[in-house]
Length: 143
Image (tube, rainbow, N blue to C red; front, side, top):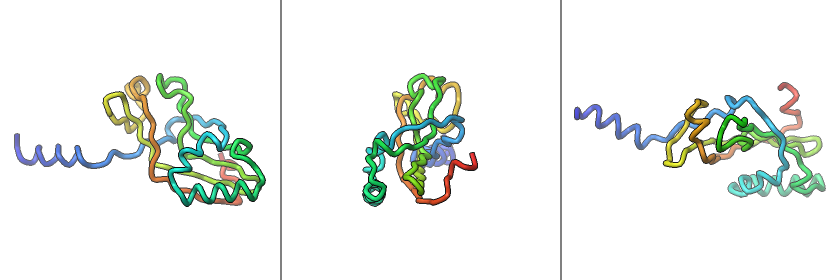
């Protein structure tokens, strides 16, 4: 095997996969903030900010509603699952959470785009590298 091919194969094997573009799912759905608290809990600063906002709003995580991207039913194993971006309404201010979304199959196969194969074989969603912002402008107003 030529050295160039070996180098290219090695580079592809160790480079991180691109994040899955959840904007291509085409669906959004509502869910309570409590459903994404395990994800929020992975980032200490975000967890502190959310707890503070809940206290300030005098609400529980079950009472705050969020919208998130949602896998349609055509995704055999992931239909109905929610992923970032999430937008959560705290009464007068909104929290927008984004993440790197990775979709994998049973054997660790990574799916980077929506495709018939991905819809059939994808079994796991992971979200990492959370970023977030607070805003007083309703982010859903322009949708």
